[in-house]
Amino acid sequence: MAKAIRASQAELNTAVQALRDGDVVAFPTETVYGLGANALHAPALQKIFALKERPAWHPLIVHLDSARFLHRWARGVPDAAAKLAQRFWPGPLTLVLPREAKVLDAVTGGQDTVALRVPSHPMALQLLTAFGGGIAAPSANRYGHVSPTRAEHVREEFGDSVRVLLDGGECKVGLESTIVACLHGEVRLLRPGHITLTQLRREVGEVSSGPGAEAPRVPGSSAAHYAPVTPLRLVSAGQLERLAQELSHGGVRIGVLAQRPPLGSFRSVTWINAGTRLDSYTHDLYAHLRTLDKVGAACLLVQEIPADEAWDAVRDRLTRAAAGTAPDPGDLP
Ligand code: TXA
Ligand code: MG
Image: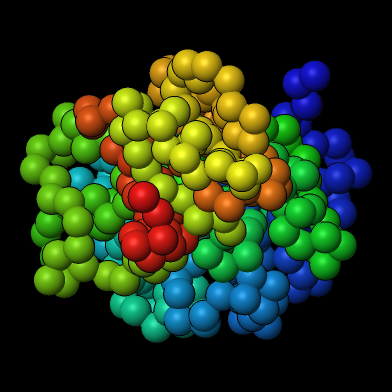
């Protein structure tokens, strides 16, 4: 059953009080669940790093209820950034801009830039409006794990150590936001997401991609991110059955995330057909990886996804997941 995507007044009061008390609050966004704290309260931010076991120099995204107070966080908003904000906020876009002096080093990782985003999930907006300030929030998973797209994923990650968890149902997009830096007169895509390079270019013309010479650090771009615990390997559609059969020999369990049903049946293979529709594939990707992580598989085989741009963000996450967990190539046929 679909979960209500608005919080009750009582839930909101509890969450806002927790933020004011310097506690963390897990909340839904349209991309993934976030683990939020008052962005202006250093000890609260420390709790995020401690819970996630995340290195303290990794910067956080500040979530705002609208673009109206953008200037309180960013020193000068280039025209391109204003256009992107106007077009895509609220929504799955994060803008990296020069920071205002008041922004804490714990948020920026000591850099002179700050990442800002106005999410579109109604419950996130309710929380931001009721709190009335910036909420710094990374994805609500332990460092390097798969991001949570359902409230129960957050519980799996943190148990009762997160006191307040707003349950807003399943995240609509299911992948982390597109991150774009608007710095030094240039627009650069740092992390692909639901909003594509083509959509960005349509708004602002030239957009570079990948880390530039002056690009800020994006820890999400390190290889070990977005990884399930089980070793994961990308394989072409034509190899799935053969590899699944070979690797499951002798009863070894193998997980498969495919875009079609299996041709034939295999005893020790857990096969998920995630389909070929981008929206539903993306929506369920992290839930599927979590499911496959729990079946006791020795290895996950993920069908290579299509080459076109619309799939860039999915390809990016899966490639990183494969890099983060892949066993020595010599271990596998
Ligand atoms: O969709 C999302 O962006 C989710 C939801 C909760 O909003 N948040 C998220 O946060 O994915 P996190 O911390 O897991 O990833 C944020 C990324 C990190 O890779 C971080 O390095 C990058 O944003 N980032 C934050 N501040 C930055 C900055 N000033 N310059 C460059 N990258 C920055
Ligand atoms: Mg994350």
